Image (cartoon, rainbow, N blue to C red; front, side, top):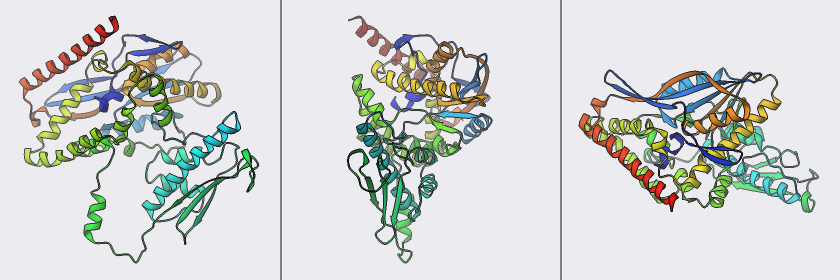
Length: 430
């Protein structure tokens, strides 16, 4: 169920810091039946308010057909600003603070993030960066989002540029903040902050066997969604959308902020390990997904077709059913707290960007009910246009389920959701 949390439709909204349960007026996902085809469609919806830029709430699936991402990218290309969903790594926010301790701490975190990113990129391309621009460019090879995040932290909390020093002989990359005074040496807030990474770069004379190359290319991903996309013949969102565009800005919490909010709310922080692929259960799920291509070969593609069909069925269910069984404390962090960050960024754009006529908010469909409700209350936005895009489709005849199997499966899913709702109702009354 965790894999589908960000695609589920939320029913909890936060007005004036008080959670309110509301019935959504509009769908954000739907199942469409055609001639021997079943599709899951996700909507992008335009909102208008008098005297304000148009805002598109662009619902996105984390794995989908390539054509879906092409349509979404085409829509976003015409917009002036895009705020996108992505829980940020620790240290990827611009360092800042009201006290010396806060400025030192946030700069230290950013240096760790920069050094880790630069080290990983240097190892991948087998070349040490010489400038911060090199770091920003090289890291985008690993992840399109990194270029923008690294640009955000290329200066320290005192607005002095981070200094890079690469030593090709030692294979080291060192990043330094000179602190408050911007000069080498000093004490207290003016003391130097330093992070170094050593990168082992293979010699051009080193010989690689075909077996070495095959092992490297076949190394499984730790990302569950990436593995699922590969196994089902789908594309992965992070590979398909242009996060490196200069008018795209991440609008989300950092991983340590999410963890802190989960702890403060009494929710299970093991969710983070599942999302990042670090937990044992996630590794088991990863391994199972990697078996699908083999099973497909034995069944003529029936296993992946069945998996697609089940995903379409689950993700097109009513939001009130999908959200049953998820802890309220967990749901608040996943949906409400992260949406609050988006709305704060939206308010900043509305207040400061005079030449902006259109804004896109690119988020999982599960966030959209809450965002739409609060946009109307806070800024007066109302929906004026819908664009439905097919995120995935399947010919049900290719699956391993017949019509009677699907009927039983739908009943089982609805019954499980009903029981979860009853349990939640009973626990709230006690």
